[in-house]
Image (cartoon, rainbow, N blue to C red; front, side):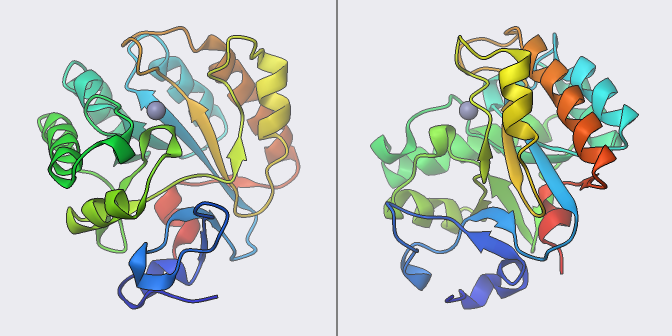
Length: 239
Ligand SMILES: [Zn+2]
């Protein structure tokens, strides 16, 4: 496996994601964190599209019951409405990353458009007094829909971000997603996995995510009985 020099500290433990079915060609695309290969019994739960005033607080209560630290990729235009909720996430030990300001399909944007989306989200989050959680000295960024192309990745990196995707998808955004279906997918996670879930939606600031919250509790119960610990993405990939 090739390593990218600048990010070697992170990438030593982090997995590389597949880009269009192939390994990234070193510096051209750079690496994306999608899991850890350290072999430790740690799992990273990640939540996109919040903060959600209706469901993020309930999710935080569930996480606290299992001493679980998670990673939240916030949408800027929701973040600017919920500064107190962002402070609570930070104070509880959860990690925070950038999920753009308006949730666009990034490959359709120019470099300037990508840079602006990231900057507006950053400003919205930092207005709360909280900064993005660093990983290897950079902030984390999750591209909406996981979509990216080389130009998108270059623009993200130039703005100081490490892209973070996932290794376990729970499809909790589907209308047919039930608590049971979501939980069964999450419970398949093993050492080093990054689980994708949602505490919000790009379609509205307070969308019902009670199924995702309940499924999180089911998955935490099962996986903690199996001896797993639940950590933030920066902790998952730490050396
Ligand atoms: Zn999203």
